[in-house]
Image 1 (tube, rainbow, N blue to C red):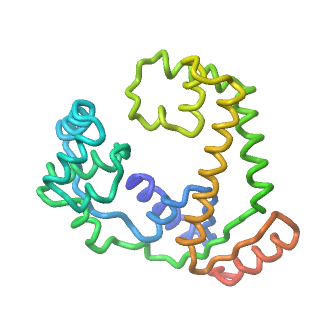
Image 2: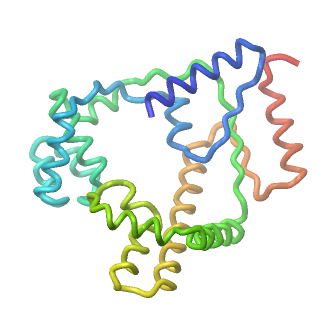
Length: 237
């Protein structure tokens, strides 16, 4: 994410220098937040410490690893459930590499981007959003999603890897192991997708509360409203 932020800031600066208004389009809120507000300046973690953290998590399991972390950094251990491998191991890595808890690094002021940002959030009606989620997963199955899950299983990958926990993958793997029917796996995956979309919507509404326009659906009025909103921030006319 830090590398992406550096590249994005470079492109924004180039656009402004060329007399253009940079417009960022996408749906990953954490990247937008990192771009605007900066990231904690945690030093690079040596590969051997990263490997140590992963090996220890595999050896102890989620609960055991969190107990080990709690003895070293109780504040971080209390923030995450045992199954949150990514954040637990990150907290362990930072403490081992720097001698300071990750919370201490995160409390240090980050370097915010030297720009003003205005945010437009396209928020479709909940029913339409959920219907789109269901249709998208059905299309993924039709395009070979089950074969992709089968290939992941055959690869013998670590179950804790993000790819193994992607929305829909655990449900399809349950079907491939003979635990549930395909129709049940698809229904469960669609529900997981809808829940993820709801969490995203909530995150956006809570995090992007400054200079934010929320609209209920795409329409001509949205285009007019968006253009008027962007015009307020144009550098030149």
